[in-house]
Image (tube, rainbow, N blue to C red; front, side):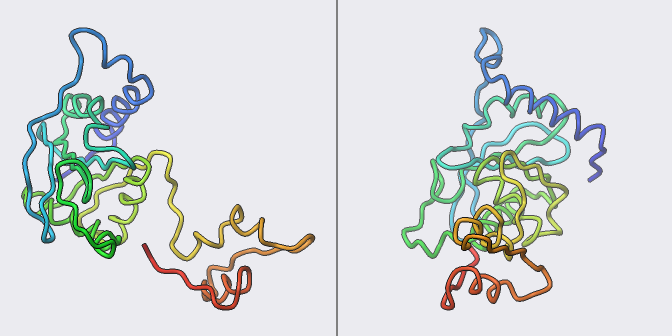
Length: 207
């Protein structure tokens, strides 16, 4: 499945314009509608998935507290640009299943849902476009399922390595003493560095 830079830029530019000016999609005659919903079995649950178009696959991942409906303005633009657009309600949202245990919402389960969704739709790989929490999930797809990831587009959620999240300067600065300085070292154990900054017993779980 070949995704040219020209095609990608055309589609994402169109989607971004409609995201920036959502009122355009509310004008008479061009109001967007969601594609029909399909329940797709994946990773032990069912996801509500909205799909339209044909061509290279683009998966749109909503944020909190959004739904697939968040992307109603972008779906037709990407379809017109020649993409197969796949938009799920994520685990716990909308019409998708919502397991009761909080342990069932870790990043391995969430990325596994999306990978299994691709299997159910007979899609080998896709570009993952995410907003807010969906942007964080898009970055993790590239880490957990690199072979399924053609590219990542993330709105308002820049990539921060797991080891660097709690060592980010904006989080470290408030806990440092006056005149103290700290620079994270990617070559050192991140937990040891966190314990230097915060407290000796600090630990972090990968969400």
